[in-house]
Image (cartoon, rainbow, N blue to C red; front, side, top):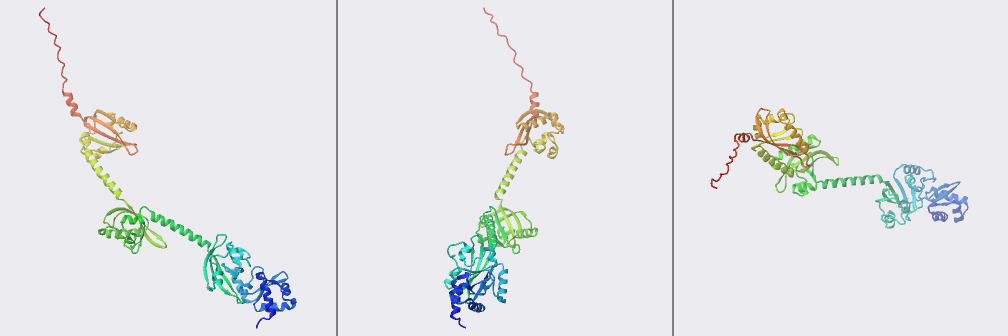
Amino acid sequence: MKPSDTEKRIIGCIKEHGLHGASSTEISKSVGINRHTLAKYLNVLNAEGKIGFKRAGMGKIWFIEKSPLHGVSNGSRDVADTGLKTTLGHILSTIPDGIVVMNENYEIEFTNDSLIKRFGNLIGEKCYKAFIGRSEPCVKCPVIEILHKGNLTSMRYQATDKDGNSYDLIASPMKNTDGSISIIEIVRDITDMKQAEEALRESEEEFRLTFENAKDAIIWADPETGLITNCNRATETLLERRRHEIIGQHQTKIHPPEKAEHYSNQFKEHIERKGAVDDEAEIITKSGKIKPVHVSASLTVIGEKPIIQGIFHDITGRKKAEEQIRYLNEIKRSVIDNAPFGILTSDKEGNIIHANPALIEIMGSPSEEKTKSFNLFKLPAIKKAGLDKVFGKALMEGEEFNLEKEYVSHWGKKIFARIKVMPLRNTSGEVTGLVTIVEDITEKKNLEAKIAPVPEPLAIPEAQSIYP
């Protein structure tokens, strides 16, 4: 049935009053019919779903019923008691996501309880001002994209409100009963998710920077296949290979080929032991160099997937230093052991650390082990000779002492010795022990005693002249 002229005039009057609606008195005056007749028209239009109302005290405020959403209870709004509106109202009031309807003028026509609790009653306000706090429409405004540009499809976008909260929005066109089109949006608060994503991104970036800039090579391998899945910049330097040449290779490929089986078994051992494992190993570079490394391996989980992480520390320098120290110690030991005089080293407590063969012979000791079993401050033969006091003074004052002394060793050997006591110092200059050099000068002293002193020549008187 086509609407009568009176019905058109009634609808026109309500439209002129906008979203806030018109009272029966205002409609009666505008249309020019009495309130009793007007009530009949209003009830018919309401039954047809063309207009709705909300109570205002004892009266009613009438508005254009564009869609079922406009008749759903919103704050103090009262609606006709229909099954559809009751069910729809219950759904909209219980869902946690926000629902908002906007017209082509950016005016908010409807909000559900979720948005009312957060923003208050926004009916009639401009959406961009109410939600975002802007003075003009947003850049990705669905009203512009869907209504003004005629792109009548749903669109999804994200936005931030004036309080800094983030939302995920799905906007869709909604055709109203009067033929007009509004925008209905589903609004989901994703602030917590955004914050979690940002925290995760920062954590991942921090981890990436730590991983990439680590001084030691770090290699990840799949525990099931043994294939390398990731490595850092230091690994490229260590192996003299680009990352794409390393990732995807079996972990045994970074070791000397003749030892592949050994390192395959070592890899399996790391998996079985699960905890951190420290080992020394060898790797082979692209140029064929063999480098010694210290490996700290552990089974860990990255992104819910188990991996074997190996941290490879190049110990080439350390190994060279150890070899040099070993070589120097061998030279030192050779010099000391072949010296023609006795050399004895001891710590601060007087414990004998080393005695060379010459000292063993000078003292008449059966072995170095027997000699090392004594203490310089407790051996009776040393105390009897008063040498314990010389040793103590050298340690206390850090000075060198030289003396010649008759000495009877623990094993009964009597010698005349030239003794030199020198403090041992560490790199900080702290005295840590003593070096005692003993030279047997018994034969020299005996020889000196056998040689008698030459008597001075007799004085011959000066001859007297017999001549006057």
